[in-house]
Length: 113
Image (cartoon, rainbow, N blue to C red; front, side, top):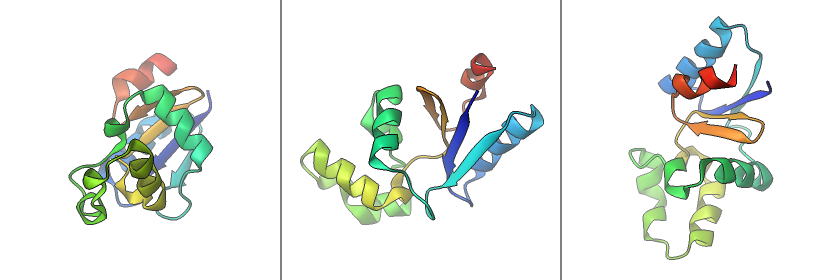
């Protein structure tokens, strides 16, 4: 199992995800989206696993409102804006190889063990 947690340092759900894996003694790698971000290739792999672009957006965040991403016409323009300002991502994004989840989803993570 190769777990990667993409999140924000101050995100409560990200901290819960980290605690979930720590309690089970499962090694993981934490990537702070605000500091390090996500590459286009990683983004494409996660999008393939999730299937829906809108599931990756945190529509309740201040960054989402400030970005005006909802008013962009094309999906490509929205993706470009998302990769420019990665604090718009809904977190945590937990990735295990070709599988990924968005948000706190311990029921799915149990199936990975």
